[in-house]
Each structure stands twice: as structure tokens, then as C-alpha cells.
Length: 165
Image 1 (cartoon, one colour):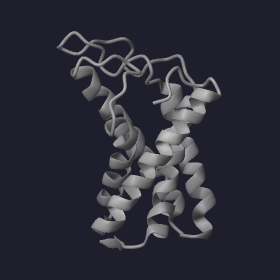
Image 2 (spheres, rainbow, N blue to C red; image 1 turned 135 degrees about the vertical axis):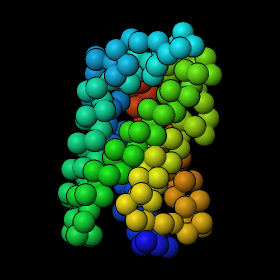
Image 3 (cartoon, rainbow, N blue to C red; image 1 turned 30 degrees about the vertical axis):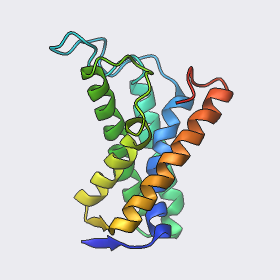
Image 4 (cartoon, one colour; image 1 turned 60 degrees about the vertical axis):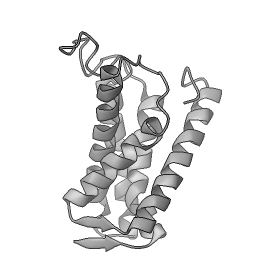
């Protein structure tokens, strides 16, 4: 198990997840992942905002970011793919949970909305042999949450999102 005990290393490992998480907003998409299917509770499985186009674009953008970072870490292309899949899985899981809580697509869920991709990315890194020290894990969560918030405000200002959250 590789222990991540520096903020720089943690940021390098998480950067592809940040890019993957931001890309679906830019990529857009029309084809919902859940195909309009409702769960047993009668609510949408994921919601209209989770599309195949956004999912694929996010994974590709995060993986490409990993490829660009291979100069810093020889396995970064693989890590980029891994954390991108983890970030998208975290985002989809949060959408699923929000639908179960009867929250509409786009409804704000503070902390969940800012950190779902981060939790998914860290979980994916853990599965492939990385472990974070608690101070690094918490500081990266703070950075990831703040950057997510700022990126959403910018996307709202640019007209890419309906809400600034």
C-alpha cells in the first residue's frame, strides 16, 4: 500500500478526478444513463442530468489529464483512468441517493454535491493500493470542495449550469 503523505502528491493523484467531475457540464449530453427508468420508490434512478455523453467525456478527460501527468508519475495514465471512473461513480452514487431522498435533479445538497466525486476518487485509489494520511485526506477534501464550488459558480456565470451549486 502506497501512503500519500504530501499535499502535492495528493493533488497530482486527484487532479484527473477534478477534471473528470467538471467535464460533463461542458460536454452536455442528451442520453440519460437511467433511460428515464424509475426505481422501486417511483423516483428516477439517477435523474435527467446524468448522461452517457457526460459520463464518457468525464472519464476520457480525466484519463487524458493522467496521460499529461505521466511526466510526474510513470503510472499516471492508469491512475487518471482509475480516479476518473471513481469520480464518476461517486457522482452517480450521490445522484442515486438524492433521488431516494426525493430531491429533484439540480437540487442543492451541501457537502454531498461538493465531495461526491472526491470520495469516489479516493475510494478508487484505495482499491488500487493508495492510502492517505488523515491530514492530507482532510486538506484535499477541503481543496476539492472549494474548487468544486468555484467551478460551479463559474459554470453558472458562463451559462453552462442553471444553478451555481
